[in-house]
Image (cartoon, rainbow, N blue to C red; front, side, top):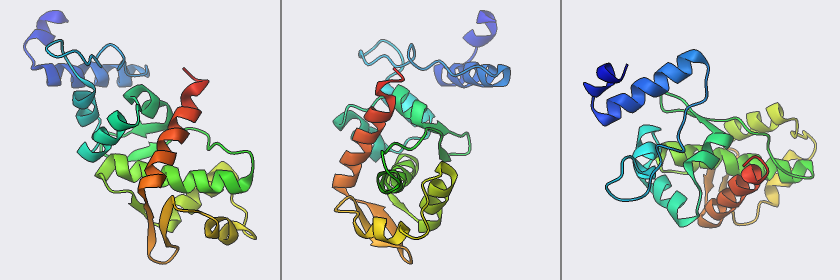
Length: 179
């Protein structure tokens, strides 16, 4: 197998190995590949680019000490570029969970496109899937969103700078016990 992999570029080798692991149903190995020492192989930025993480999002990761490993516990990075939320939405109340679902929806798009904008339908669907959608109070919960989101149901939402900080805190909170 090594002889076959030797013929490929480092990027191609990574894709082949990840593809083989996926075909076998195994989780991808990213920890060993994420070496931040210069000249010693693949960096977090390389893995981030390979996963399709936007450049702005990679800078956000570095600034907020969010790792690829943490993101992979919260999101699934699909080969078509989509980023799917896979973790349970945190919060002690439906209100907290609803706001977290909206922030995480913005983060998913930020990771994918470098832009934290998203439509209400996406986040509302996440609330319904997570079981925190409260038809009678949903609009009220969003009215109390603070400065983490801008926009509205009709025009769509956008994650603000404080929202990006909140997103980093959510990812760290969601992965603290999983590490």
